[in-house]
Length: 413
Image (cartoon, rainbow, N blue to C red):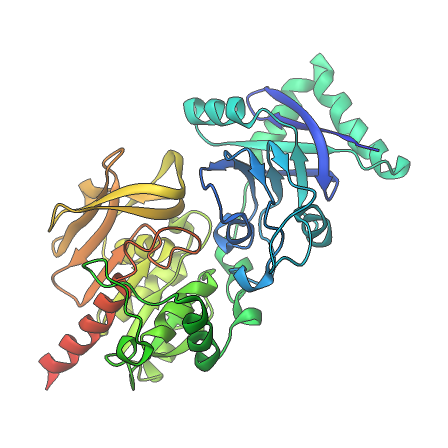
């Protein structure tokens, strides 16, 4: 029997739908993503930690559940909202349905929702907290859900109820997800073998694919990088391995002295969830790394933390950029690339310190999408060049990182 579910937004709007996945009562920040595919990568992306994801694409789950495509070992979102989910997926790699996957991992889902109306509301009002009330058919459990619904429906309690939803927050997000992709990390030879099978090989700056894996990994062979894991997507590590680099992952609480003691040739700063300004300890340690002269490449959260470590500021966007179709303009060339993105904060370009130059801007709203540093060997981007899933337009930035490592070493000779 199909059970009802309700989405209560902090501003008082309520949407009725049907329950799938896990049932119960959860609260999180409601955000929308515009990806037409890649729902598995979205669900397992640690950057969605604690959030309620709204998929704008109307049909989700049509190719089932494919563990090989996960970005970490499990989902990190609290809730999942779709227009329709596919009960009979068709894909030779599928190992189950999205409904069963959500149930197994305790993610509360709602379907048969007007996601277009919900997205428009979030787009106009900005991201806001929401609470999902989902019935399961279990009388004992549903009594608690019903009490929550009754509180909202009671006019004398509604204001306090909405205030509780609005007050919910996520703290220590990076610490909660750091290392979450370790369980699915694979050795370099497996990554190369799979790359050969699916021809998922590096893309150069001129847009050409390098189909020769030996050629693709030649520059990075023999070099070692530290992946500072703030909630890293698994494909960041894979892309580094494809360049022939040895990758050593460290958790978010790593100290600068310990990282420097590894004698690496460069440092990769990963993506991650939450407000970057909450991570004072990481920023302090990263400041020391930036003063060491090691080449640095930052992605998403790593981009923001690097900017903060150099003296810039960040701010929260109205509704963020989430999806696989975000246009970014490279200022040095004038070229526009389509990128995959997932972030709710941005670097304030009015606060950039000397030595930090704007490298990319968002073609829709002009916000900062990348920085190049002239006083240290470092650069960073707000979008995801590893693009799992998404377009491979900016995959060449991993090669740029290898080139930066090589040029920095040559200058020291």
